[in-house]
Image 1: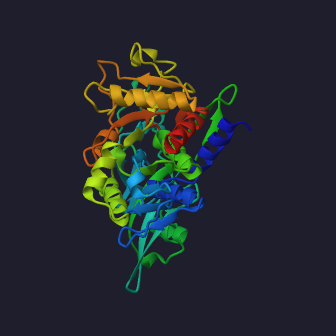
Image 2 (image 1 turned 180 degrees about the horizontal axis):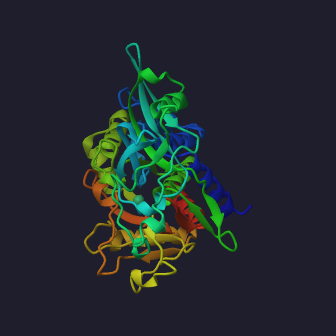
Length: 427
Ligand code: CO
């Protein structure tokens, strides 16, 4: 198997076992733990040493991983940081989820999490994953939950009942997008949640549970050159960054990879990019190394942040939707993203640095800008640098159908990203 095939298989396996942001964070942490990284807890003292490798989680859904070069703190030149996000648009289960319909059907009350293409969630086997909190006596126990069965479906309305459907349809989140769970009199949904966690149902206190599509990711295309999978935005970048982190050793910089949660809903949580998470990790590294604020400020000025979040490839059926000159394609390599309004943090200085890095890594680089008459999306780079202001660049891997329940990307691009991040972390 070629190296890019290996990485695309590993990515698909990672996505398959990461149905929620909680699972993604746990699996990313497990990747580096397997390489000997030690877990630190925010509420405890940290003992960090030159040459050490560590990770810290926040809210079970964001993770920061860092490794220190062997030399003394005075010789460390700064931080090499890659940031990505682990959440994807989906549906969140509300409290009191069961809704009985004409004494026959049980449906689950849900709401949208992030901006998605809602029609892509219909007529597919769905299930539920996330975390649940149980109380036993006075003890509170949080568990990852994944109900590993084909549990739910959001059925479309037949064409005969909606003759207008072919002209395109608006979906009402409280009526059209409610999943069918089963028949009245069957096992209750919350029992299924407790059962999946191996806990008693009456001890279930609260949960953050989300729908996910049961379909596994797969290779696709005449030569297997694409991947079709859920949550490629942004698990493809998160996986590539963490793989590079696990496989590389720092030289003169402290390497750091942070995967935030809640990018799809504005990043404004304690585990999102608009939090102090990154800042807190940097200050604690400074403190534990016995260094001063001045030391940290000098290092931050000499640092570099790569914000990695997937990008739009030219669509085969809608080439006119892309910018006339900046046209990324699947399998064309790293996408460097520009935005005049600086929603992407890239500027000439940081773009040149990224291009040089790609050259050194031997990976192709393409450029992206929105059409000047299309608003485009946002990402986490410019949110994160409000808290820790340092030179940064926005990149992504090219994909189609962003925010669909299943998205399409290039099978070769994951390997390009791994190589880029490795070169960054080793340089
Ligand atoms: Co994204």
